[in-house]
Amino acid sequence: MNYKSLDPSKIYLITGAAGFIGHFLSKKLLDQGCRVIGIDNLNDYYDVNLKLARLDKLQAYDNFTFIKGDISDKETVFGSFEEYRPNVVINLAAQAGVRYSIENPDVYIQSNIIGFYNILEACRHHPVEHLIYASSSSVYGANKKVPFEETDFVDHPVSLYASTKKSNELMAYTYSHLYKIPATGLRFFTVYGPMGRPDMAYFGFTDKYFSNEPIKIFNNGDFDNDLYRDFTYIDDIITGIEGLISKPSVEMVPHKIYNIGNNNPEKLMMFIETLEKALSNATGRNVEFIKEFEPIKPGDVPATYASTDLLQETVGFKPTTSIEEGLQRFADWYVEYYEVNKKISALV
Image (tube, rainbow, N blue to C red; front, side, top):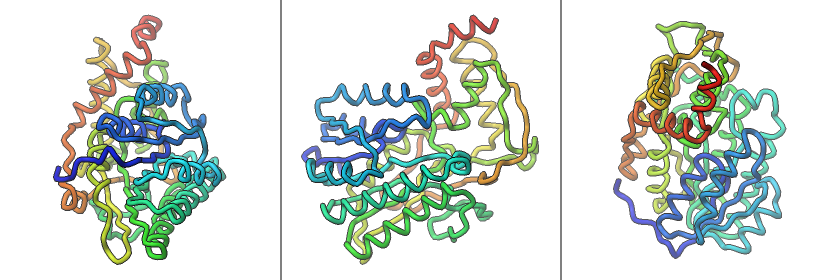
């Protein structure tokens, strides 16, 4: 990839630092000698122990500072900016999950709307060189044209989560227009890998298998019209973000949006078969999920498929991790982290 090496004299503030992407990005910057200020509220949306395990790895670095706080709390955000004066801000803190947003809308407004507003206001009053923030492929809604391109119409989100992410893009554009804040939004496409989010399908399927429970597949058992997902391995995502840090927009309104995905969608059933093989390799036994097929859930979309041409033109982004390699790394980590051999002994 054609990008400048990061400047270790600068201060990088990363929200959601104990989250999946936040952890790996923080680690990458810390490994290069950068000063990282991490903010996370360590909420219990999923297993807090996993967040603490990620955080423990980061706190082993002398150049890492952790602030336990919520971005929806304005004092926490402004206090962090005033004390540390970050040069670059990467906002990855958000309430994630499409289905969860249907059951728990309040937390999405609190974190994704109010929280992001606080970040924008802090960048307005304490100018930064670059604000990078997480958007999502969900903004494309039920768009039937594939691959999805950044210029596509995205005014029909089909979940509250997607609405909040589209709102983030609009808010960032407005602040860039009014206050010349260099801002870049990233539409992530199904990020996976070791230490990932337990609410993601591949992680949940693995949990179900070792609990001897069936997995639910929301495609009606229609293999000819199976769901497609643009699964993107965590290392490829981090490389893409790293490349963009030193590439803020220089347009009249310094705001840019990029898809960041694999540009190579996989059928969900093929993904599941590959995960079964990876777990078989990791455990030394044949792994086959018990499958139950159900209708697609409200808010879900049939296909996510990113055009990453714009990102490739800007920083030379090109994912290199195959689905087989990425899932094998996840499976190996899972088996070790959760001491799976003990669970296997209980199953037989």
